[in-house]
Length: 254
Image (cartoon, rainbow, N blue to C red):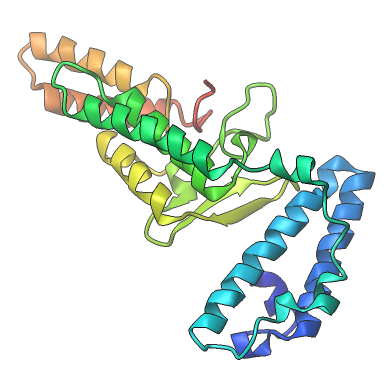
């Protein structure tokens, strides 16, 4: 949308074959930049992914008659894209549907069982389900959302990066740029459940801190033995822990 706005393309009717050809050429130039400097561009597979996402949206708009045809499907527009990666390279970028279904079925059942079992701490199963859903349905890589202690640029996402209502998540992408990524409904619900479990942490709280939950539970038990309510202890400890950990936010490091 930003790329289009810079070129006076503001509505669906403004998107023409020439628009998509120029966008494809823009992606190709980013691929060439990546070949010269890995930190200053994107891979060819990413270029095809970005273009395919736009094409899918335009196909939806065509189906519902917002536009008469999909300009991204025209050969003269696609001709401007970089050579498509080989089958094996392309397949390594994505999970097969049966792989995604098997993993999410396991994570769903594990989280559901933990939530409905009184003597089981549900934090880790619910966190893992949220992480799995983000990776499975958004197409982001782990490196784009997880904290990496060896890379100061990759501090991981926080709740401030997650817009559940708007359906987006802001990540540090392959091109080393902070950019929004669509957050499908399949990933929104698991993240919402995790957020609820963490008592709606502040924006600077890690989206999935590794030890905040355990720390808050220990504090709750200590306060319970001194006559204070466990609920108040847990909520306060979660907020304090999140603020204390805000210097290194993110999923993990695992």
